Amino acid sequence: MTTATATLSPAAPAATDTALVRGLLGCGVAAGPLFVGLTVAQAATREGFDPVVHPLSLLSLGDLGWLQIANFIVSGLLALAGAVGLRRALAGGPASKWGPRLFGLYGIALVWGGVFVADPAFGYPIGTPDGAPAEQSWHSILHAFAAPGAGLTLLAACFVFARRFRAERRTGWRAACYAVPALYLVLIVTSFAAADFRAMLAGGALIWLWASAVTLQQLRTHR
Image (tube, rainbow, N blue to C red; front, side, top):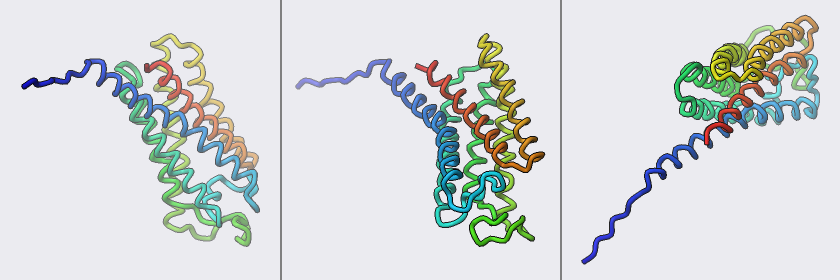
């Protein structure tokens, strides 16, 4: 009687792990463009929605509100998956611990924004009284933590990754890690000063896409 013994190549587990990490990183890459793209598309086409006076959170309301709720949650879960991929891809050095943690908190903030919905305000959805609501619901109060949560964690992540890119002598990436938060803050201040939520959306889009770009950079180097 002959017994056949199957042996696995030592490279097989490594290849499987690499594929898993690349898949997770790919999720993180998709998070920013998905969230920005779907948000902008809705802001441009949703009846009664004025991107100047209405924050993107109000897209979660109305008959099509489920689209933005799903956008928050799915994009957040993709960002969380990307954070797991970053944790496995960054092999020591600056940003290897706090980079993935901050990206994970960013993902949680997006999911949070989808689970807890803002109140109707400023005439949206159509038929809603103008101005802010006299009283906020509990879920609207909780929703209000989502935007600053995502913004602050990614601002911190910019400086964390700047240290890594400095160590790796990636001058362009390091410069971007300083330029992005500076421009983000300028756009946020402009939004409040001009009472124009388009500047806030632009600032958010900038830093969300930066997060995806950093994840893409790791995806390209992790082979």
